[in-house]
Amino acid sequence: DTGGARRGRVAIAACGGGAAAASGGRVYALDTYLSLPELVPLDQSTGEVNRHTGHNVLRAAINPLAGAKETIDIAGPRSKIQIHASLPAIYINLDATEETATSDSAKPGAELPWDRFRIVRAEVKNDKRVVGALKSSITGKTSQEQETIPATAEQMSEGWIKLTPKAPLEPGEYAVAELLGKQGMNSYVWDFGVHADAPANLAVIRPDPTDGKSSAGPKE
View (cartoon, helix red, strand yellow):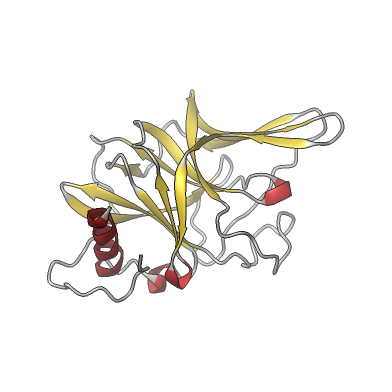
């Protein structure tokens, strides 16, 4: 899609949402609001902690006891970030070898695969959103469950990864999840919703109409 690729380059670069903005580890959704492209930063959330760490990517693998099931929940039935476009591109710029805030989930310096991210559908249950679950059998074998959205992952320049749904997303709640190999799924996710009629997001990056040059962002 030449138009989509051009729109992505213009939005990412002209908005200033390039490597400089994401050097500490950022995830953006490329949205369209009132016919204009805009980058929406996604923060990491979990059922117990909801904060943006700036330079540290929080990772915490869930290790349920044998025979138990543990879910990954996010507080609240609706994300504070609502995307208006049904086919948003997700741009990820994270250091795969970054030392994390929780050392029990990944060894410092261990390389994580670049294509470890997934878009998952969250199930709204009362006042929370369930984005995944881990089950542990009595033998200790752990399996993970989540409703993964089919998507295409592209490795781009300057450490960027582009994650694009293969089909328009239905209205609802979603999250970008990070898979940690044998340790399952990172319980810290980047949550967002998709609702065309949602109000405008406050913290967004928009193209500068006076700047037609693109210099800072990932190039496709």
